[in-house]
Image (tube, rainbow, N blue to C red; front, side, top):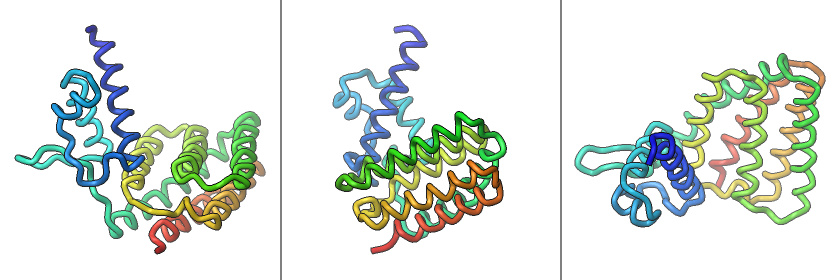
Length: 214
């Protein structure tokens, strides 16, 4: 196997494990045994070892001496801290995206928002709706074109996915999120950078409350 093939395999294993963690198939606290995972995925240990190391770098897994790697656990205090930082950074992403957005970028965001609005007529799907929210924010961060900002938010998003919540199962929360997305897009569309920052901050602050609400 060439170096490129090994790297691609490690990336594939990383993506698979990440998805299984986010889906709850590997819940917080689960041991990430390289031999066991290699056998389960029918691959050699090397790409699994590299993938687990990447999960640690992502902030999704932790390594403890004599115990090995395991899926990290996110408690209420940690999720508050994650969203406090994300609020500031997503606000900055909204601000910078407004200044850099092309007509095509705005049209793409409007189309994404239209799709989200139409899906409100369908039954809730926690995985789908959480993914749609992440895709929306990722699109704005891509327009902002700030690599350190995007990488920091990628790590925060990963940690937030470890927090078990039924937020996206509730109809009211789905509609509130789309309404908040509309305010962000409206500000970007009109060229109101400070308005986009404020709308983005307000949206993330609201998510921080709703995700912990019992």
